[in-house]
Length: 344
Image 1 (tube, rainbow, N blue to C red):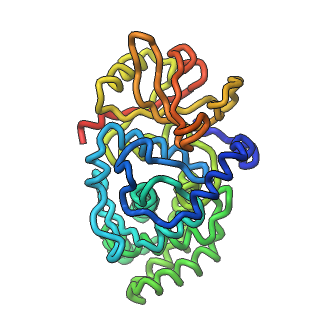
Image 2: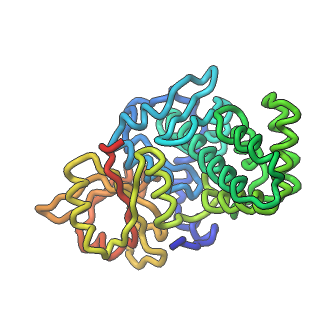
């Protein structure tokens, strides 16, 4: 179930102190790929977009299997990073796209690794969507399909062009204007040196309704990583993020009987786990944000308490970490996502 919280309602939940902290953070000079604490859930800090589903999920992966995160990135800032997921080709991320995301407050994590993975993940979602839409299309000519699929299934700058074009035109609620997108895509394809014939063919795919509809659906579902301000999509999207890095992930309701076993597994180590609060929360405490994703860090079976973290890195301060009794957790949260991080 997707939480349809309007933009201004969500922004209103962000304390002024937190917003000023984000502005101060964005003014700092870019850090190295890995910051002072390396790959750590506490190093992950969400920007001003509603990307809690991505940041909370990546923090959970970083806790469960930090080597999976490190192994996902190769290359360097000079020639471009390559982001490797469990399946599919590597995604190419250039330093200017990392700088763009930082400058526009997409991410305020330590170092650049979270931003690099965020851009790689955005491209991966686009790639999967476009491949599926070409395969299903009944209007794309038969002789065009294999050429398009070949271009979409190899790594390289093509997905960078799509990522940049979408970021340049996406509205705050995740909508795309087709004509403007096509113009921007042609510009970015040309700037990246993609051959003219291939560029014309790939831009022309936007003229096919099924292709464009699939693309816009993917952007709406993942709007935050493209610069739109949307709310947490409870259930499906955290599954996609965690599965991209660990291979598999599952979602269940907090009320399900399976929760106890998964919490014990979390305490044992190696399990990545995220939970989303209910859309309409009545909890007056300072940590509660409705329709928001949190990373589960640990569970104490003796005291029956859950240790969680807000990906803002705040609320509560100083780092967003807080404890709830199991009964409070079950009262305030609706859906959780989990994966055995040691399996990757």
